[in-house]
Length: 296
Ligand code: PRT
Ligand code: ZN
Image (cartoon, rainbow, N blue to C red; front, top):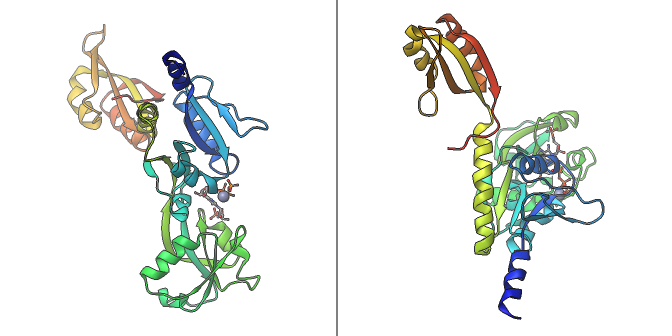
């Protein structure tokens, strides 16, 4: 192979990212990528696709397969629940918590049972799809119990007589309630994470840096609003105290004397309180603008 051919071949090897093909994380993974300017069309039949506007290939897989596909280097990156990474014992780098897919894995027991602590589980049969995480927890606490591995509908195991209690994912808790179960121990907190192969190429590492930069800018803007208003110059000091911005609020003079324009970023959940305080000191023409990215 002559050198130019080697160069061409090198350019064609694109970073691969593994995403869940369907299920709870699929949509939010794709919309996170879209929000950072990486648009992926989901393939109809194939499991591999190429982003339209970024040099990256996406592999669509079951979430169970993503940790090991990334650990082996078949894909350099993946988006998957932290619960799956821990359960598979995958040797990958957890690069970023992504702020969606939040849930926990908990021990739950029939609501008629009395619960006085972990001793409850000694000698019990516990149904779960997460035997590794459960075994680690029981071992750490010196509890011997039988782990019944079940894939899917773990919550029906006690009523079906397959187990005494369960260890399963809980989000709102309504599945437990409708199956007559009560959560007694929160064992593992999870959310969707960006994972990376530990030995990726320098080229893939560069692409990862760019992706991370964009994700940070995106995550930084979430839960924040941009505020713009006119304020009497005499009230400026008070307004600045109400609006601690990233550095300090931007102040610009207005044509009408005694007034200026003030710009600032605020946390969305404090917005209305800040607006009330600003109006009380004379702010007018307040504009609230959705933020898409914050690049520091
Ligand atoms: O087909 P594939 O293998 O890819 O998907 P899957 O069916 O194994 O997983 P999927 O799509 O259900 O979930 C993917 C990931 O989403 C999980 O690994 C978690 O990281 C995350 N996640 C977040 C959840 C939930 N919330 C969740 N509520 N995964 C599952 N559930 C289920 C849970 O198993 C239980 O049956 O929802 C029920 C409990 O929900 P609540 O709200 O009633 O408490
Ligand atoms: Zn799965």
